[in-house]
Image 1 (cartoon, helix red, strand yellow):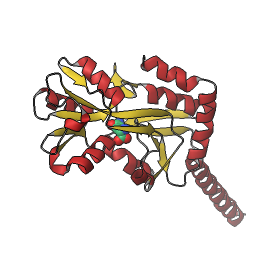
Image 2: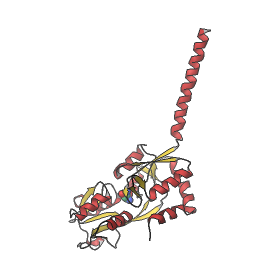
Image 3: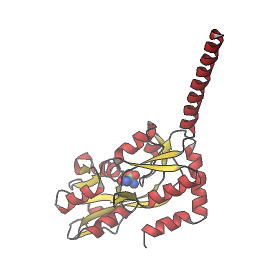
Image 4: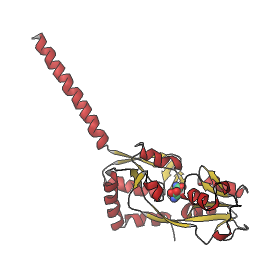
Length: 249
Ligand code: GLN
């Protein structure tokens, strides 16, 4: 009888352990929270306002999460650690005005694009640089580390000409204090930085055209789920409405 009890309790322990294991297993494959990595120094896509991360990407990510029946958790990290973190599975997806490039596609998968953008050049109003063609390898060009502005400028003018900063606002401060001659950065944040600082302007000629998309781990099912949600949100006008809320033409 005693032995029987022991067997029963052993069996029970096994069942419980199995139950716990399978519960954990199913939790990680269908967890109810999506973790998004971003860099909140990039208005109007993401910035910090009253201790909260707000912007176009945040609103679109929330709309996607809602469609997928999940909660959204946002991690604010440095821009150049987002793709590596997604690749390692630290975050479910990266959304930070991330431009789709062939090189990045080697490391992560991109969803369908949700916005178009251009790389702009910010200069001081009285700068000798008055068009993109005036920039030479003898200039000091400020960029945000790891962005397409950094990658293209380093290709076009050489690493020596390019000064890399942790974020856009720091690059713009360097322009104001005369440490760099121009800043190459995405057009919408460029407009926000110029509006917030006197004596700066954006050159009329754009430096490069690009598209933003969400990145996920290579081979992840999440890409299809996000694309389905994006399709619906584009069709019912939600994406346009969110963008129009932040970008007034
Ligand atoms: N669109 C640029 C890139 O992907 C910059 C994005 C950013 O700074 N958040 O490199």
